[in-house]
Image (cartoon, rainbow, N blue to C red; front, side, top):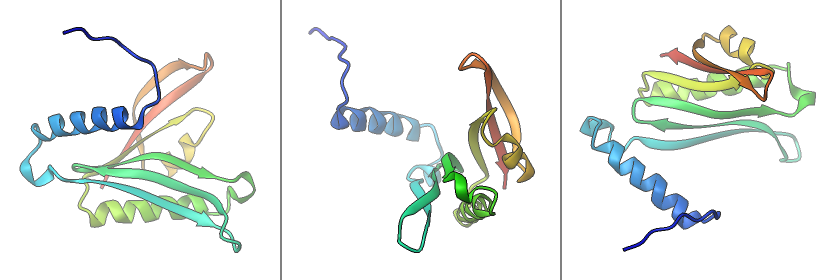
Length: 140
């Protein structure tokens, strides 16, 4: 049998890899956490129904991970980021998550997350040669 590496965007291959890792990981968690995976997408829409921002995350076993939080520039500093964060934190609490984790870059929203109770637990220097990558967690 021979194998080779390919470089291609293949949704079936991506699903196979993600599913394989998920099923491997499930073997190492308590049974009551085994099927806990749920994507969460909350959006901010304007009066015309156009998406102006939102937050994307997933419940994974006993935590919620935030992947992205974005708002159009003209609606930043208007409280919508806080509303999105509070809403996803409420979902995490309802789903009995123990903590939330996320990451941000030094030019993004570190102070915003810290203001909302998130604590830095790790950093990477030299990101883009001049920035830091922060990893944050908030216990629920």
